[in-house]
Length: 76
Length: 560
Image 1 (cartoon, chains in turn green, blue):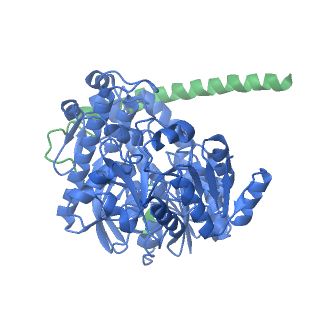
Image 2 (cartoon, rainbow over the protein chains, first blue to last red):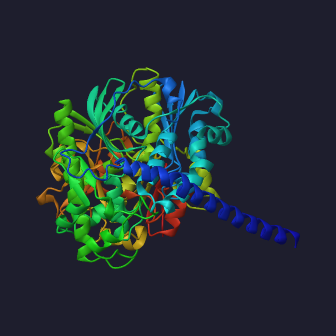
């Protein structure tokens, strides 16, 4: 009986947690990401080359790379 | 020195272990979990690799991971900016996932492995490039990698020299041949990251009648570069591939399992034609740019054996190397090799000539399984085993063939294979109805002795990892009906005695009995399951399907 009650409490808390995550993400998306996205659009930024259809080639040169062990330690 | 390479958290999780640069073990996690294209942390593949060498995790000197998670997260965030305000459904899915798991790989390694030494991160397409070039027999070569998406790159081109790899050009997300192929795969009612090979098989039945429509989806340049019109794709905005606009352009999507019509076949045929054109353009451009006579190919799209065959036949390259695991599973090997050879500066090891890099089971382990299951088996000498199995194949019986170490990569190459007689016109139907239960349009592949390959196929280079398709010679098509596809082609494995002695002897013996040194070779599994790994898996598959005879190690088991 107690186990079943605990399961129900966990389910309710889980649902509340998901709703909270959803709300926080939505707020971040609208009020942080949104203005940045609009400013970027006004500045003519095309991060994904969505307006690049007319180019002669779609290859993008990669900057020369000097790989090192130290740099490989980083996730970026 | 031991270096462990890991790929996981997207699809086809895998682990590869290098000892002083030589690949001593490599396996995909799906073989252990029995869940196809498994995405989770490859615990069991890592445990098997360590057990193979008899070492604890502390003996591993460095771990390499097959991508740079923060760069990928950067791409996801910028994609969200570009997709605002429609991209929330994607945003709300990836952010929690990444904060919970993908951005915490050091903690994951410590927790899951008990490993506290350095972890090194290799860019995804560099890992693909390394998986093709560093194990290749070439001192220098052009490199092309093509897949769904790495951090930003979806396609790269570059050059490998000695232990150095330089990728000089890329096509960036969301413009992706892999994602285009997956989008059409989903539109045709197959599973993304699983059904792409089926679409390639279906393409042989279609004509490229949708070319005008595809010219709206994708703008192709003669240099192989391409651009996708994202109005036709949904993956920036929601967890789906095709947009409603693509559905209006190509017609309604096919429901999974629904009847395949000529329209579906023609869509597949057009997609395949477009992808071949792009890959041929890239290969020609790589040749012009590098001037080198050798090419290394990797990335999931390099599993497209039809396009690969055309690259071999129609571009100026003298030799092409494609590793046995070209997809994300192989990137585990690639990142480990890149760390050891390129970053640490150790000379390259001997070229990779075999895909048999996974689990091995000795006679005692096999005997234990057979006796615990009460299976009556006959133990044979190797010569006797070859003779009996060859006779079974010549008599049109279907044989489960479990030998040697498990293959790394998606192809069964004579270690975990189902073998049959390719000369029997009914064999495809027999396999489909009794064993594999596959869609009837999918072809079966041949394994042929290397020295005899050009007699039966229009192929004059080795294809040891079954990654090249070539036409069956017109005069031989009637002799090999079970492996000749609708367009007269076959996906060929060439077998040489040096790397696959037992399998070579078997095919040679079949040749003595039938006059044709070719066997039908399909993966040892049933539809929807990963290829078998262990004797237990093999016995389960044997018991639940219409396989007539099981050759497992030194034992032969026959159904009454």
